[in-house]
Length: 196
Image 1 (cartoon, rainbow, N blue to C red):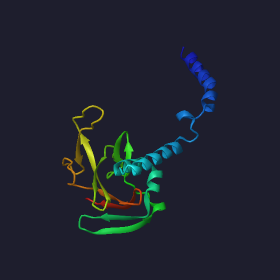
Image 2: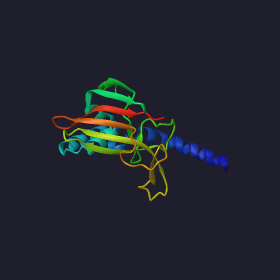
Image 3: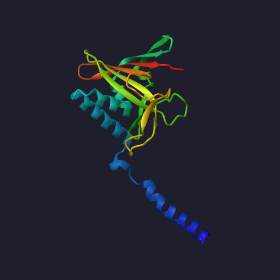
Image 4: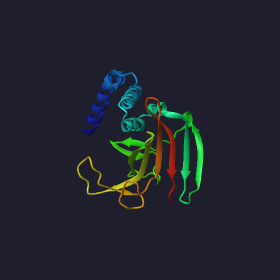
């Protein structure tokens, strides 16, 4: 019986493989689903700008490299600040900037480079501030969640990487600054806070 089952399975695969390989692309026949997704995100960013919603623009920036590229200044001021006020600064041309620190994962935010290599349980909390001059500051903090877990929408209680319960403004791992433009905002600075 096992030999028959194995032969039968190979026959089914051999018969189905040509149809599978010749099938049209998924996502409603889109020729390039990635390009279509990026185009959708660019449209969402345009709508966010029109409605003056910096949060919606920032969500689109997290989800899309094309949006980040379009809404980034020609040069990013990048800085790393240590605990003893030492600071390393550099100016990164827009085309070379690949340090954007936040990404989406299953409807949650995660850091693109965790503090501890391979830490799959590190997430990100964000706080938005808008100045009188309409500059937007996005402070982000690395966190781990601990139970109790309340359904699929809650991972539990957020704790900073130092083990203390997360509180807005207490501990910040980085800050992204967006300056207003004629019709929207653009990313102008990326500041990181090093902690030992």
